[in-house]
Each structure stands twice: as C-alpha cells, then as structure tokens.
Length: 164
Image (cartoon, rainbow, N blue to C red; front, side, top):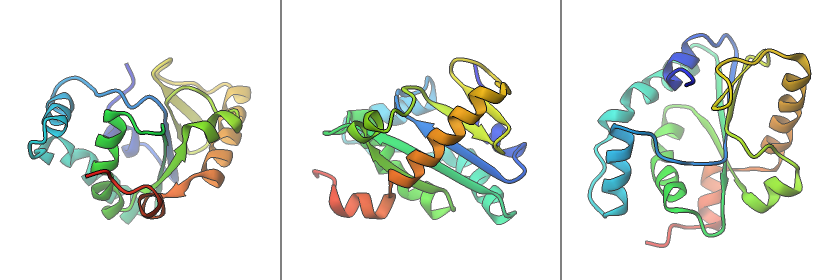
C-alpha cells in the first residue's frame, strides 16, 4: 500500500502531482466522512486536517501541489464528495483541476491513480515506488496533457454547479 499522502509531500522538493481517476473511499475516517456526506449529515473534517496542513506547508515552502480529478458525467457519489471537499484543499494552495472522463479517454490518459513526485518518482496503487525512465516519461506526458485539458476547480464549478 502506498504511503499516506501527507508523508509523500514531506519528501517532495519541488512538485507533487496527483492524477485521480477512481475516487473510491478509503477505509476508516474517510469512509465515515463519506457515509455522513451521502446521508446528508455534516462532515467532520478532523480526519482531513493532516492532509490540508501538509498541502499548506508544501505550498508555503515554495513547492507546487497539483491534482487532476477525473469526473464522470454525472459524477459518482464519491466524486461529488471529492468536489465538496475541494474548496478546503484549494484554500490551502492545492492547484486542483477537473477533467471530464470522456476527455481523459480521448487524451489516452491512464486509467489509474498515481502520484508523480518531482518528475522522478511514481507512487500508485499498483506499486509503492516506480523509477523506471520509460514509465516516468509516459506519466510526465500524461500529466502535461491532463493539466492542459482540465479546468481549474472554480471554473469547473461555475459550469457544472452542484445539484443541491
């Protein structure tokens, strides 16, 4: 299993990029927060605070934290959950962009979640750490295509407002 996200950011010197396609909830506190969200109860953000603090610390120290979230049309319940949490991440400095799932397929983007760290290392659900040059180059290009096609969070929400 890959290390916790906030641990990944601690080792980044310049740039952390996350490509998020699946949006499945994690066990534990996130699963509890997701259950509260889908049932319409308030979501206790305590479980998310370490991650938000890690983003803030990274950005304040001059590192970039970017994420492209691939979103179905209509979004899945977990994608709505991610969209509802997004303002907290954006507020602490994460450059969050949204990409329609159809566009991701047209761009031949990978159908897997991954982190690209300092353009030198990949961490994904498939492997804890990948440093193969060909894979890195493939995912760097995928990152560039995704970032070029995705909309910033605020722009996406203007076009696709929440249904509630």
